[in-house]
Image (tube, rainbow, N blue to C red):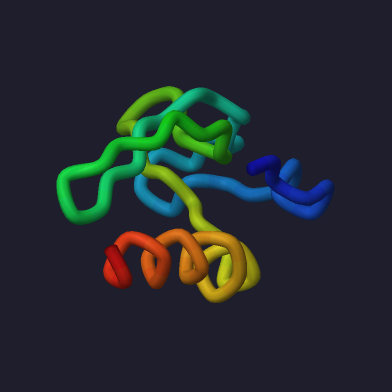
Length: 67
């Protein structure tokens, strides 16, 4: 999963630092998935766009729940 170009301009509200694309580990129902997402280099806040959450992530969640 890769973020779209619009995420380049995101800034962390807590740290006032630009978010950088970095590897994070997402987990759901005991399964973990390494993904590259925009994250704050200071506090670690991870940004998940609505498009990603309601698209690819939702499909993965539904597939895991069907097992």
